[in-house]
Image (cartoon, rainbow, N blue to C red; front, side, top):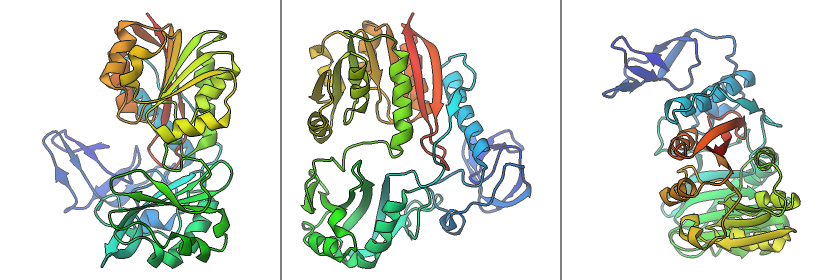
Length: 397
């Protein structure tokens, strides 16, 4: 971010803090209180600038990674500042930039890749990602260097057989599950995916691949391969190892939870519930995804865990009163009814896990009526991107 002569902030992708740059004359978009600029030349680079290793970052202006041009230490510093600034500016909390736990792997960590499909006469013409400055265009993906190599091996084989994808395919998701099996989820608005078995047979390691068809309106289902029970369409962090570190920290912040009732809201496939059960808690885990809850039940989490499928805001009145809680909402943050429940009847300790610093800060501000921030820690689940996971411990005031 820089400043124009009139004082307006100008946001410039692919620049770095402290650099002096020249913007393209025709690449400046002016708004009332800010502007967006397009980088033409770096006149005075900072020492933390590096050469991005991914061909798509520079050649195709890929919008998937925003920070490949910065050394990893500089990325971590930027993310600490993003979280700290959001909590101070939006959350009105007087806290320093938090400590950040660096990722175990800087590359090849993603267990899920979501690809856009550009159609051509009903069939797939280009499958890949969007340029950051042209979100309506799709460039063909060769290799995503933050994706697990097993998914990219699948992609190298699959891209030779794009003609076997369903007609009118709009999105393609590649996912790696915890047993090492790979999933292909094709979304389309047309007829069911009748060529899935042919695609699976054409892949060199097709026996380890499960094909799902996701209709435009309706639930995804397996159309080729074993129905393993793993919910390939359910939410799960794309960096499972780092997500587990964040969950462990969150659970530790609750202290002694033996024989105490703990809510695990937006609990997904039960990872946080399992950690709480290990510590002797009586866990009530809620998630809106029925398939995620079904798979969590089959896992055998041990201890006293009650798994409930449904929206948290709809179920609050039917849940037993908690002694503590962990919430891990989607990027949109807590539903207003959930916020009201925690402010109207506070729990001793509440840990909020978030993938969006802005909505986290907004909710922390709302919860500040009855809570104070006791601890903050960031976790780098998404190296090379501007995204960051944050955990905040809130204690009843």
